[in-house]
Length: 116
Image 1 (cartoon, rainbow, N blue to C red):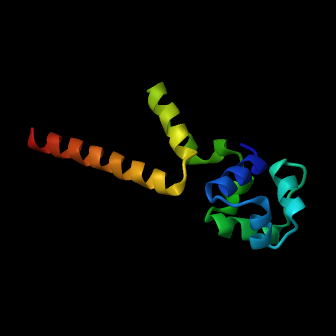
Image 2: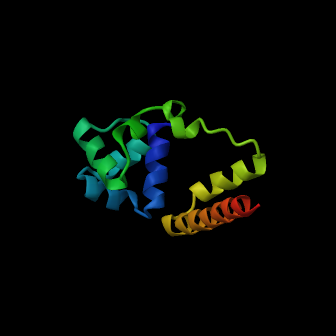
């Protein structure tokens, strides 16, 4: 995923317009559009503001996902993998709910294994 794609995804997750984001990172709105289209790159100072705004590392923003260990996870169940991709597009509140449901299922499985 390119820097621009990541930026757009993060902005949409936070339900910010380009104008709102531009104000928060102290750049002109047109810069945000150019960043998202990969037509230009932010300065180091702006990159740090972006990382802080979205609570991500600058490494995450700058480097290809293939270098991110969390993306090298292999899920053999294609349907489950597709579902996780859809969950990743949801807003934070829904993702948190799904994480809690998954945790409950994992804990139930662990308990069943302990008693058997």
